[in-house]
Length: 129
Image (cartoon, rainbow, N blue to C red; front, side, top):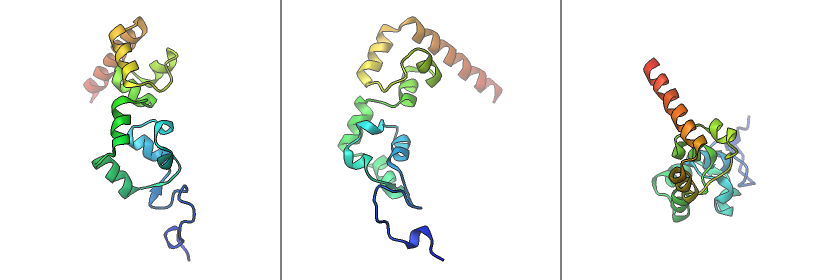
């Protein structure tokens, strides 16, 4: 019987039993995949490579994490709101760190309301636990 690990990988873009798609790795790293370098986007990432990226991020990863564009979950977290609130207010797109800071400075009504609602939701969950 031949297992997945017994057969050589002929295509580096395909995940194997020990590798994951670039999309999965990007999600685990908290980055927006289309903004990552082409060679990262085009190849599968092993768990060892993912650990190395997390522990010793290359310059492109550090810059991407620092400046963006950031994926929705990171944008929501940085704004202190839910992803649902982003969608409801037509902000369901990647934002850079500068755009996030600008929104926090301007604090539009929708953002203030969403932050308040999110904080209340979190306090309710913590009081239930």
